[in-house]
Length: 199
Length: 199
Image (tube, rainbow over all chains, first blue to last red; front, side, top):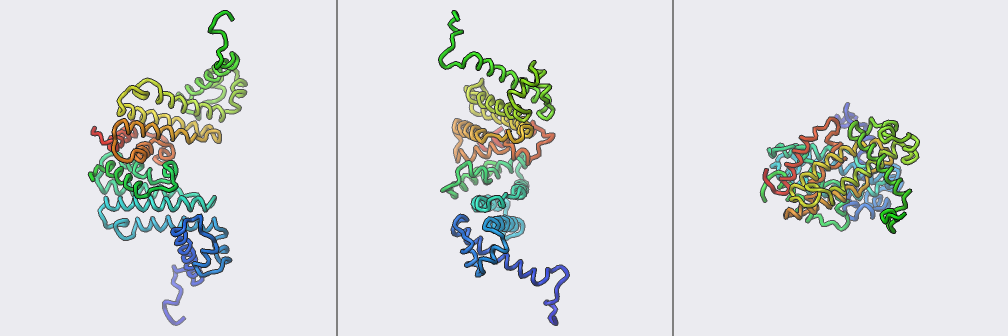
């Protein structure tokens, strides 16, 4: 207790809570890596425990069930993407031209939506997607459109740009064996039309 | 039975079934008129029975509950709109320029969506909107876009044009006290951008 940095700070969680948070991050990180590599459907609790170097019991104590773990990965991934948009490096984060930010927003939104589609399925009832996710995306696109000095009804134009990136629409377009690059090219073309920007 | 047109035709329903169908149409027509005039929330079974000139018992025998009646009005209204699009008079129906058809499609879709939003609420669990409603609209917009010789990814562009007219989006935009004309103007501007047509 003689080292100042070992004294608990007023706002800092006590050491055991900090450890728990770190462990949780590590478990989620391992799960997310496996989900991205193999697809959520292929990820078992055994595999996550092995990858994170913990016993399976630890994993169940922390997340209750495979569904609970998938729901936690889903929330974590959404929050991480939002943090990147708000304050990550450009061009997704602040500091790049608004058109470049819009393009990488669309690309990463499409990728997270596809990743989350599978997570939502695997998380079952625990995986209801927060309606906040849509509001966040809509607010950000409206902001970029006004930065681009787009004339017209910004909220309505934002809805049109976002629609093809949202899950219910992607499912209607047919999700399986989905050609992501072709879809992204079509979305960029749409965004150009709405923003009034030639290729 | 001496008049040929009174002979039952092979494919025609027997007279009592025809009567029942006519009565049902009349009850639905009366209910729809009241819904359009006063809003679904204000329509009582008493008022519908009085307007249709039948006893309230008849109404309940036919539709079981107020929710059941509202669900029937919803289905009827959706089918009627689809029939107008497919084979009604121009410019909603065939025979007009595709751009004029697209405009009146957008306007009437917006109006039916707003009408149906209230019906879906009043119909409760009976009122789950058929997913066929979206497919129909998407198919029609894709058809009009190809008639307009729009280049690009037609299904994706159709999604963008349709999105602001759909219920979940309208609810996010905020439904109450909704300025329909202003919204429609914004939608026309969007359609111009997507189709590549100047004002």
